Length: 483
Image 1 (cartoon, helix red, strand yellow):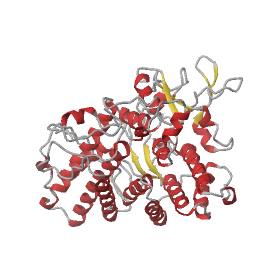
Image 2 (cartoon, rainbow, N blue to C red):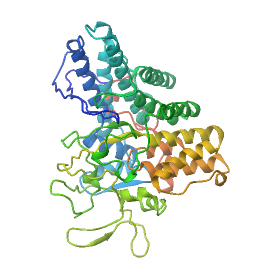
Image 3 (cartoon, rainbow, N blue to C red):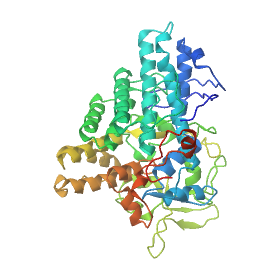
């Protein structure tokens, strides 16, 4: 990991469903870690900086969620604009270690780790902070650090574990798989034990947030029993529920809902906005004068759109036709002969009326309650094969979508229900960056890409360690398959 000497701390505005307002924003151009740690105000400022680095909004979200998590899959692709050349690397599996998106994601994650380490390194020096408040600060720092490492692991596999800011060796080696796993599980478990169920301020991690990240980490590691158990813990707590109208879940006015366990908050300001709609509005789409349409267009594959039942309410979030500002009508899914156009758009994020240019205030979900339900269903199926319990969890999500129940009798084997869960997760979470990890977990990421005519190799299940890090650290080994 490169040594960083002068770093910006921007206050985080990380939204969780139970919170009522944003964290106060304080901006610093540089800082001495020791000067921030003596008081509650100092601890909070460093935590705000850590949250700011952990969240991914604006163009960083476009890169991490869509390039890393969607364009390399069977759901979504991109054409047009100056972004096309960069997106093609992910569509065609031609990325390499020099891609700047990898280094940007790596750097942000390690900055979050650094700030969390400042809190944990100085927890015994705090003065005048009540014990319960200090305990909460420590739990937040442990969550941020573990979440950042979980994020890195999802993309790059094991990475260097830097668990203190004191006497950091500039030359680091990757942690072992076992050490990485133990650290993430231990830290998330400890954080969940000490975090409150709700917070007064938007932007504070809760018990549910930590458990949600832990549940998904277990799931992606195929630790089925552990994932099922943590999911049940979240369900039993009864703090979360499905939002009634899926088509309006992602609207700005519905952000404070009980379905969001973990989100990246957005406001209509550069760097803090959700810019996805500027990429999904088709050419000459009738937009408000305060919005903008990018030349780089995010599109859904017709084959994916065709997997939806015609009565599925989630289809309301997909634009398949429109009349442009000149009065011309456009079909976007299929042409008159029924040939796929691969041009439908995800309108999951209801455009923010107060959006400014590309920046809209729609919060970006990382983990929703629907994900917890389907994660437990999947884990139970992997443990026991199809059961009434797993079918009921799936149907809970389908009820909200307004479609008919599936029946246990229709899924005689684990493999049958596994395939259905993968398809159902696609319909529920398209555009949320989960497709890559779902396909990897079910061993269909590489085979699916090959079936699309792409020269995908087994090593592509991980992204390369950024070349800038390899060049700066002679002890850091590149991931297998990359030069």
